[in-house]
Image (cartoon, rainbow, N blue to C red; front, side, top):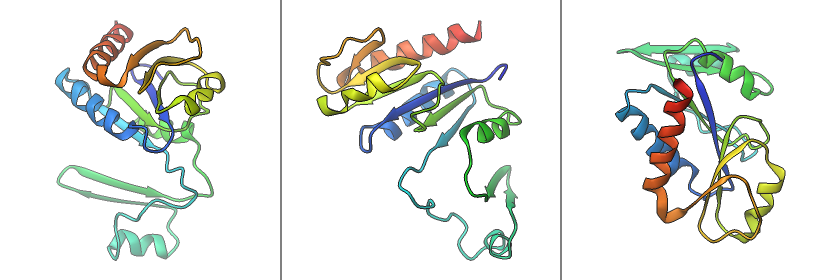
Length: 171
């Protein structure tokens, strides 16, 4: 995907993924980078509906596979099928004017990852996941890793490091 950098933010529920992505979006915006995000809703059910009782919802209920709503420069898209693969979503994002895609979740995909580790019980993730570029942990880690490790309280240092990685990838 030429020109667009894809980074995954992964960890278990309540590990701080969404908060971290919010901080990364802010940092990217400050660097004039356009950000797209993709979140995996891994709770076994469909995410909450956005357009309840609106025309687009009526279109969906009538059987439309894809429904979009545009207004004031904002485009909302809903597309249904049995299962969406991350790569299919990424292909849609290729058409958008963005520089970086931050993916929350999809642990098993092979994009560069930042892994959030809440406690020692979560460390097994580091052995199972691929392409780890950095680890953010609440506690010292017992496993040896070649990835760069940041403590939870070093978030500003991590953001600075992350932005240098993104800018280096652009050169």
